[in-house]
Amino acid sequence: MFPYTYTHSFLKAGLTIAQPSWISFATVNQKFSATITALADIGVYTITSTATIPQEESMGVNRSTSYSFTLTVQSDCVNTILTDKIINAMSTKVSQTADTQDISFEDSIGTSHTDQNYCGARTYTLSESLSFLTISGTTLTLSSMNVANVGVYDIVLTVSLTNFPGVTPITKNF
Image 1 (cartoon, rainbow, N blue to C red):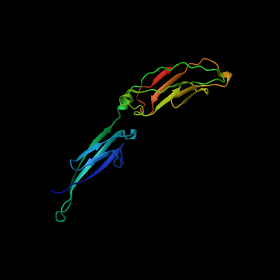
Image 2: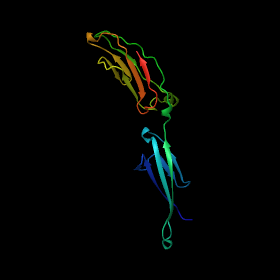
Image 3: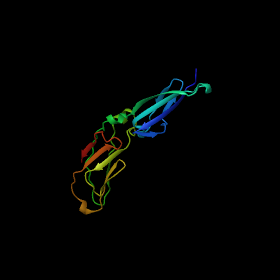
């Protein structure tokens, strides 16, 4: 029996790429295995594998056969649901201590994996751009040094998953 040699080519989005580090091939059983670890790995891959049987010099050309298949890498995060939470009304006095609150939102898939970073970053946006109402990380801060800012504002906070725009965002009025 002649020893086979294997070569593989990989396409992602129609472009030839190097073999991803998360894909391995076992020559013993001729099987691929994959362990996905990053959002960047999501996509559709076309993998072509060529098995070649080297011939003895007197027999001439090597014989080979190729097969291709498609590997689709998806994330379960496309099916996650952002978990609702209460955002309280905020108030402060001019030149007084700021009013702050945590606005971190969990998601169902992150909860099932006991890792709220599993589906990646959240994007937090406010319906109005007010210099005295800011978001830093997951902290919403209301603080003013200017009496001209006194008033009642209807603000909408929108929270979405940065890497999964198809997941329904949450909007909260406060």
